Image 1: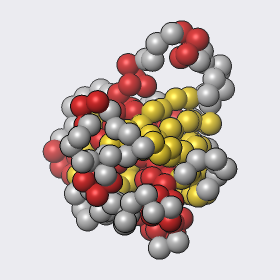
Image 2: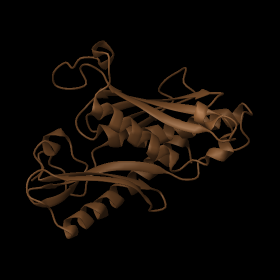
Image 3: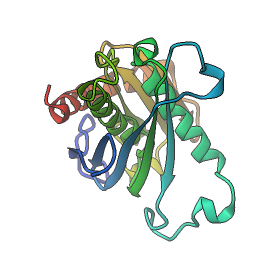
Image 4: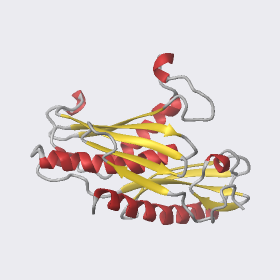
Length: 238
């Protein structure tokens, strides 16, 4: 029995709230169980120096956790004067995931930054951030189309992410903190709506796991992301 009481192939309760931030061109607050992330998309009419004059845009991300997103207060990274390696790794992952489903030539020389701020952490914050950021990005592009900044929405597909792991030797979907902290293996899957794989991060916490177990986790991830894709489409009104 999982600590949450969920079936092995069950996601936590998913809530996607589009338009959660008043000033941002696009935004979404995502809740997966107790994990809650606010994703905002900000549009700028310029690109980084390495892209100037190339006629294509840029999509990037920043990630952070509020001090009491976890069980005890964590220091603000700004107060420490530098980001942790974990933060840098996660925000790069979010950026890569979103760029995988955007036609950057169709953007023109625009930049969109996705700020993913964790309000409450209970496992799977990077996965929730990717899933919610896609909604925020889609809405930001819709805003740009409405303002005639671009001719059409350059998003060419969906992307979402979910964690899976081995709990009690069995594959389970969407780990919360209690499971993630004691799983024999855990993995994050970033998948597209057409079945493509953007990234898989998988780690054994004790004994190595078998290829067949990895494929079992991938099968669960595909089931989970299918539900996430449906929730995304509902959030954008598609």
